[in-house]
Amino acid sequence: MQPTIQIALVGAGMFGGDVHLRAYADLQRFGIAGQLARVGLDKHARDLAPVKFDLVAVATRSEKSALKSAAAFNEWTGHEPKAYFGDAPWDDILRDFPDLDVLAVATPDHLHTQPILAALAKGVHVLTEKPMCLSTHESDDIIAAAKAKNCIVAVDMHKRYDPDHLRIRDDIQNRIGAPLYGTAYLEEPLEVSTSTFKWVESSDPFSYVGPHWTDLIWSYYKSKPVSLTAVGQKKRLIRDGINAYDAVQVRVDFENGMSINFHNNWVTPADFEGPVNQGHEIVGADGKVESDQQYRGFRWWNQGGGSRTSNNHFTRDVARPDGTKGYIGYGVDSLTVGLVAVCRVKFAGESRDAVADLYPTAEEARITCALVDAAARVRDLNFKYLNEGKGATVTARFGADGITIVDANRIAEGPEAVFEKIYDKAL
Image (cartoon, rainbow, N blue to C red; front, side):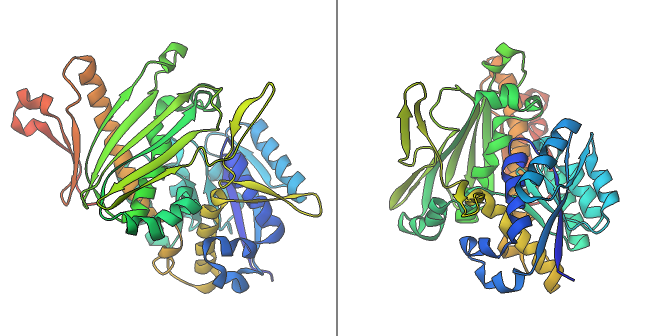
């Protein structure tokens, strides 16, 4: 019998319906071996060449979008996955496919934990979008469940696989010396927060896209955070009746002494020339690296269309002789490495610890979850105090004793009130 990996996709919106669904379509038709050289895992190509990948189900909140996604997959591959819909469609999938290998989670940010834990309880591996979850405590629950079942929880941190970032990690960071400070930014279009997503009041720009950059900095230096401060602004979305942050700025200080500012918004005007504005820079003791991920030198303009730019590294179509198009790029690479780890566990009998160096793990994602969790608390307090004319004085401290919110405005309640422990374990 041909070795098979059964996959189900939960969430087929902007990212699930584009990147995940297209990536699984290529796997359905051609397997994984052709993708492995891109991520340096081609030594596994012969072993994994016979493996069949089968998308058995796709699920969304609405029946219409689920059927649309299943039909699109059928058009690309000649295979139509079963469509599910509802508030918790993963429960039906896990019931109907007891031999499911992977649940891919591309639901809204605040709805990751429930399907992840449901999958792990059944011994099903997980590929999840970032952030893995929004709570430090939930990240521990996920890690514990994964360990108990020897399951992979691979987090889609695709910024790691951008070829420019790999050059920084493997070469440039060594040239510029010890890191001093830096800035990372990702600014999303206004339509994301006003029409594409209906859940923005349950998240914020840093929680949504900041994890890309916090994870990237972690992948460069493997240095843990020691403190942070955060502020946010509400001016543009309020005009549309949306009570969500327009922008959030978070400064994180790390054990190795560097300080990085993370700037995120989702109010960039629609006529901006690129899909998003993004980039980062790091100043070291002996140099500096700048990396603009929005404008990479590829630009065009035409009458009625204005000036446009495109990121051809993230995903791109490659024409095949049969008229179909291959789908490659660093946006796919992060999914590929997680599936390699799943295959090694299932077919080679390896432990999750033995394959941890192949993919962005839940343990690594825990650091980003802690930053998102603490930043949200600090941001809200500073927003409140700024509106009261008290300044943005709240910070978070990370240490062996856990995470502590330091709020000098509570000194009137007594010195002990200034320090609020929100988490009691070391990162």
